[in-house]
Length: 192
Image 1 (tube, rainbow, N blue to C red):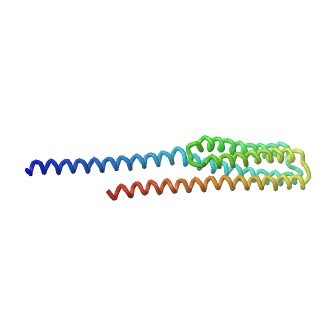
Image 2 (cartoon, rainbow, N blue to C red; image 1 turned 30 degrees about the vertical axis):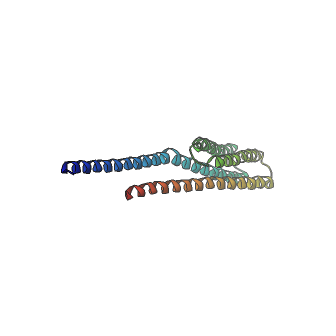
């Protein structure tokens, strides 16, 4: 075989291996880009929404505890009580807005719809008991009735936090799997 043919074959093999490596790098870059795009557009906003829900539930519990305490103080003005009840309502509104954002994102997050449904159920319970408690606080009902309503609200709040935390844990596991898949893709590309 002539040297010219050997050089051409060598150059073709070099070009083919360069194309193969370029294709693998393109695949790796696309996978990495998609991974980071998913994290930026879906995962992080979903985590933020759940954190806001968790914050809103905790603030709601704090507002209720404050209202119970204020119920026992005789010289608290009605305007201050209404202000604190307004704060309670704004915490519920924050929960609502965060849940809507999470619902919109859950379409893109694997297996999150079950958590959305569970959180929505807890939100509905929280809304009913919060309204009931607000009405009882406004009517200055007996200590026993207020404590009973507060204990019920605490239980619902704890359940809501448990469901929200489970959704966050699930998302962390999904993110870990996705991270492992990306690492595997990167590792496999370097073996070639």
